[in-house]
Image 1 (cartoon, one colour):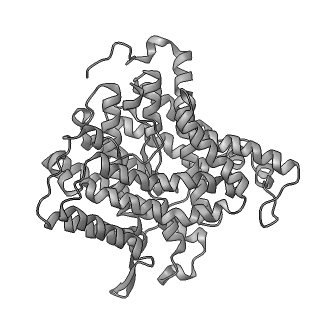
Image 2 (image 1 turned 60 degrees about the vertical axis):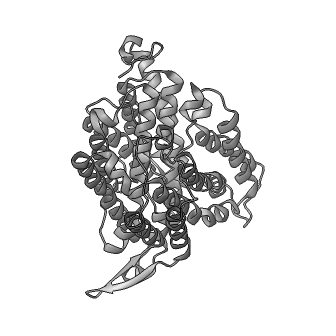
Image 3 (image 1 turned 180 degrees about the vertical axis):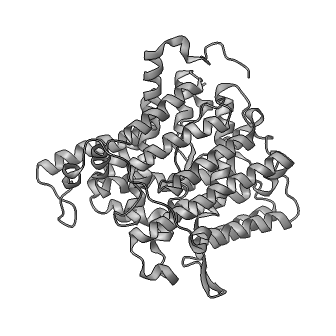
Length: 461
């Protein structure tokens, strides 16, 4: 590791109080994005979604497990992954086979089961990386494949953002504006947490509007605190066990292609930020194992998929404190917070319109990051092979709105649009001649695959 003169690699030299404050800063950096995922998923499942308490617990525990797998060397925090939102929405809308008679609450465990399998695919990739090396393996998953897949994930969610925002356009616009303002013009820590600021400021506006008697477009109250009043101050997270079905697995598993590339991008970005090479030491295979098992364990007990968080990479650059111990303190804080159900209920009372306003930029941003993935990796679209691969992925991902349903041995199986797109892209990339992508040749491009709102580390130097 090439130590920087102004960097702190052992935070113990700062003293315990400062370490605790730095840990809290990392917790707040991940907080807004991490809790937004269960809020969005609950919307897809008509309120019967992922628990915020379980989400915080799994984020903290998953982070600690990741650090064990990575030999305590990588200063990464694992928060909720946005990439799987399209999968949750798809499972919620399934109405064929066994899903036709299920309630939303009954469908959710099957969505979680799909995420468990998706997390286990990380272990397969880790084994391949260990055996053949990351450079050779990445030729099968170049940006011309993963970029369009990410674009499809974001665009498939766009109608949901508009639907939620239409509940109260004023609140939605306020939330959207706050996120944009803090992300573009924010200074210091505020630039790292634009989603959290969007939630907090628009929620304060909702409190004011509710107090003066304003209502949503359908006449309903802007805020409902009945759940807050009924919740206890201290309580255990409400875990639930995942269930498994081939259809839900085929919905979720292909998304792992995008999240595994996101993981590689984030590890590359963290390496560049702290002046190390975590791809080599402790090794990409170790970080993939940590992320994958953390995701599977989280989903197994009813939590969302985990992913390395770019927001916390931004905090590393902001503070120049690169000690993984500080990240582990943030994980402990997240676990502690998960045992306060009243806090979770206050967060759950967030109006749908605010979620819609934030989703307006979030879902579009996911697609835009897919475009950035293609642009910054300098994918050459003057080559017919690249045009063909991207075109087929986009048409499959956006055209098969109902997927493809077929029966095997009396069991109905549905391949979703994203699954079809992923299979088509990987197969075409493997058989068409002219694949010239080499991982590591463009460090900036390789580090730009995270689905988050982090300020780019190059801009902060």
